[in-house]
Figure 1: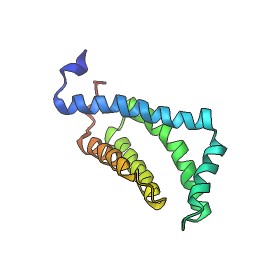
Figure 2: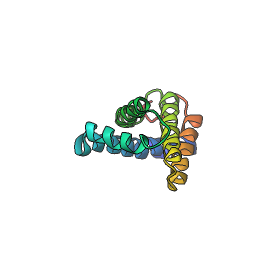
Figure 3: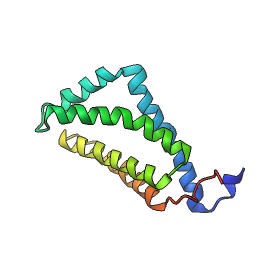
Figure 4: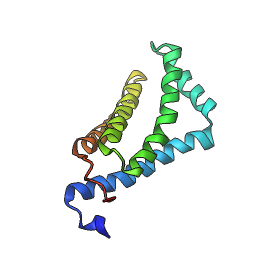
Length: 133
C-alpha cells in the first residue's frame, strides 16, 4: 500500500482526508436523508431567530451548512485541490463555531478543535500530498 510508505505529513493528511471526509459526508447526508432539508432549515432558524441574527441570514446560513457539509466531504475524499478544499472546510468549521458562540452553547469549545484541525490540514496541504500520484 503506497500510502503506508508516505512521509509523516502525507500520511497524516491522507488519514485526515479519509476520516474527516467520510465523517463530513455522513453528517451532511444524514441531514438530507433522515432529517430533511426543510426540517433542518426550520430547526436552525428557530434557534437563531431568538438571537440578534436576522431571519434571512439564518435561512441562508442553514442552506449553506446543509449543502456545504456533504459537498466538502466528497471534495475532501476526492483529493483534488486539497489546500482550497481544506481552507473552505476550515471556514465552514469557523462558521459553525461562531453559530455555537451566538447561541451561547458551552460545547463551542469542541468546535475549536475542528476549526484548528481543518486549518492545520489546509496549511500543510499541497498538490503533492495525496496518494493519487
